[in-house]
Image 1 (tube, rainbow, N blue to C red):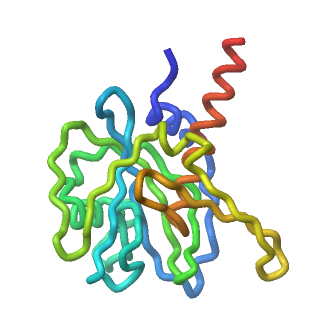
Image 2: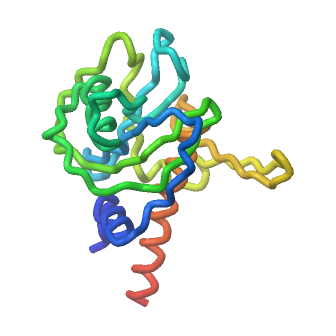
Length: 198
């Protein structure tokens, strides 16, 4: 029997050194990639931001946000924001590990954490920050037909950007980059295990 997406992430991140970014001039923030089993498969939790928030209005993103002075570290930021935005209590999240940091075009340095929650779970999204709770099946995200890529020159470098389509929703920008990193881990680990079986 194949490994579940959380198991694949845990194995990939266990002994991995996180790629850190020079934080000078950037606003520290953190997000949480949450996975959970539902209807016989695994889902990733995202949300559509409301038009009331200061940054990234109406965009699809992971639970997360800017670091507050009282946060002891970036993980505390991710857990606090997940609770504030989605109503998921910190103690209900089992943290898997940390992925590479990324920088957004709006000047945020994002620490990316992964975790799981038990399901069913009653989400209690913030009426101010969240317009819609979105549940994306991992199978849809790993399906190449739902993935778009665009390669272009930017500042003298050849850059590839990704977007994901699920039903009427399109994920782009930093959220799509984080998803791509996550899906790369799923694909690499599954391919590695298939080769071992062969």
